[in-house]
Image 1: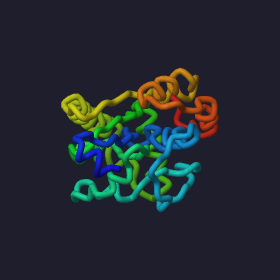
Image 2 (image 1 turned 180 degrees about the vertical axis):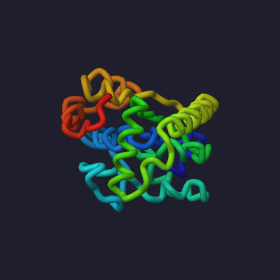
Image 3 (image 1 turned 90 degrees about the vertical axis):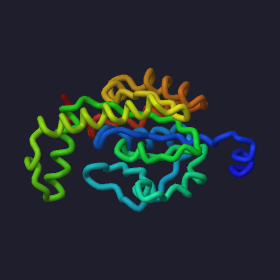
Image 4 (image 1 turned 135 degrees about the horizontal axis):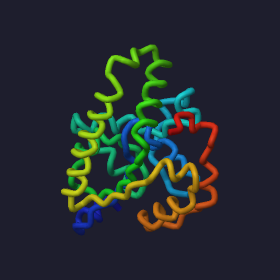
Length: 199
């Protein structure tokens, strides 16, 4: 099927969940799964205290900078989690529809710091001010790339709004993906007990 699409000049579509670290990408992947949308994951990275409900990752995504893109044929028509730092390595042979998770920066920084502490790393090696500046510059670069790609469409998804009133955001997601999704089941994924870095 993918071969025929390429032969006919129609690029297959890969549905991407992206964002900064700790921005809610795993939650969105679980929501898509709950809503009936097929996802590409391998279960290699197991759930832990930082992501008790799983990471929903596909390890080969991390090899995009090395040119490993053959797996994208398997991702066509599915949702796959790709952190924002790797988006710029996506090849042009496909169309992409990107759900880009946005979360309040102080919450991202706090969540990142907690995760580093649990891993035994030094959380204060880089100050919050420096990290926020780094993330802000990175987001600027990512959005410039997204806006400059004809084969890429994206939707900003408000993580904080999802936790308070998920249905309106999820209806936007369904409309963007142009796919019937079980919004009620997706909304049940929200677990207030896991919202541990409120701002």
